[in-house]
Length: 125
Image (cartoon, rainbow, N blue to C red):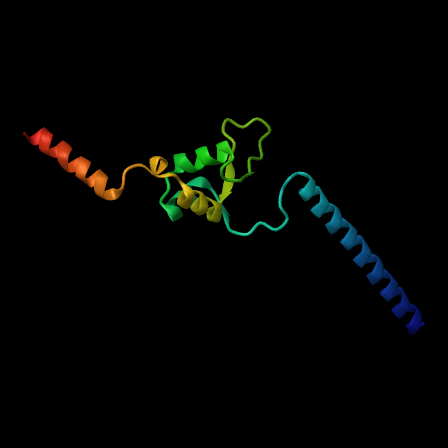
């Protein structure tokens, strides 16, 4: 009797393992067919959170995501949202920010400070 229950437990465990393997494999295949990577390094956060961590304006991060320069994960649950909610990978945002051309980056801090001083001098004169 005891050997029968041990054999039955072993058979059930093997069957459950096979089912779990099949389900996980199917889920990974579905994610891969949608273009979603199964191994995405980095942290995925909302654009405002990425902006606070990187110093890049939220508007810029959203524009990069919409242009496709930064990958995004849509998190909107509604079928017809007014605005789609999504997350971006902080590491990608940092990489794109570092690779920006000087014309995209805007003036340096020193140049911007000089411009502000000149405008104050003109206003005071």
